[in-house]
Structure formats: C-alpha cells, structure tokens
Length: 164
Image 1 (cartoon, rainbow, N blue to C red):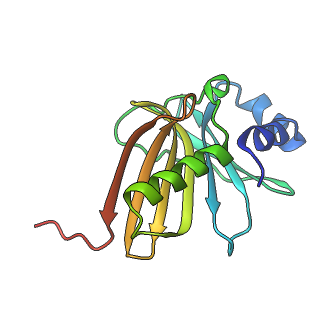
Image 2: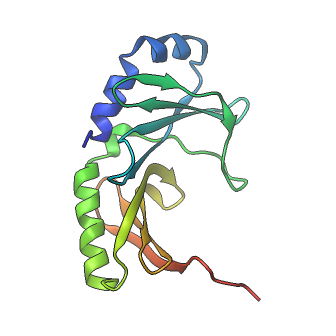
Image 3: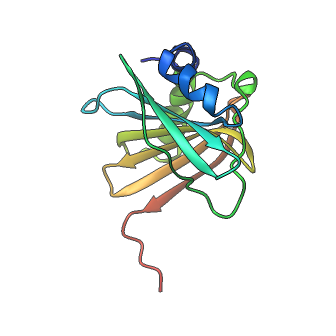
C-alpha cells in the first residue's frame, strides 16, 4: 500500500501538478483520501483548497496522476484548514493498525468490510479520520491524532437510525 508521503511526493513531482500549481499558487493542501477495500483499486485522492473561491481541486494518484475538475468544498460553514505535512508522523499503515486494535477491543461484533480513510485538519487537530463500514449495517468512525497516534474520538453509528 502506498503511504501518504509517497503519494504526495509522486503528485508534487508530476508535470500535471506543476502546471496546475503555477496557476494556483494560493491553493493549499487540504486533505488526502484513500479507500481500503480489496475490490477497489488503490488510489489516493489528494485535495487542494483555493482560499479565494473556496473550491477544491483533487488529484488521483495511482500509477498515473489525474487532475479532477474543481468542485465545491464540502464543509459546514467553517474554513477549510490546511494540512501540515510536517506534523503527520503516524503513517497510514500504523493508523490502520491502531484502528483495527480499537475495533477489536471496543467493537468486536462489528467487523469492517470497507475502510474509508481521510487525512485532514479539523478543529480538534490534524487527524486520520477512519470510517469502517461494518457487517452489522453500522459505521465505526475513529479519529487519531496524525502526529501522536492518540485516539481523539470514536463512535458507532447505525446506518438506519431514524431521528424522531
């Protein structure tokens, strides 16, 4: 599995990124996304936020680099915080090991068949935001400090929860 730093380095050294970045110097690294699933091709999606129009440009990073069209930022009235690479000490592999450990200790009846991972900077800090889609029709969301690996938050959410 390609690690985040390796994917970022591959992206930032590509001609496609360099051309885009020349015209978008104000944009900053905002997130990295990967789905961990045997049935899906491994591919990082690395996003850059534009502060002037609050749009996100993402790049698919696998064997090739592909720039996606700009899209509206997915946010809840808060500014999209920049991702500080130097503060990311926990690797994807280690973050997933910590998530598996937490799942086995606290949520053993809910095994994952799909893992969705986002590296991002939220109000509670820079996190590996890991969501397991489980065999019990629930999602297990866990947030780990990207620098220390400390568990910051975890919760199990029912897919079919009906609010009254």
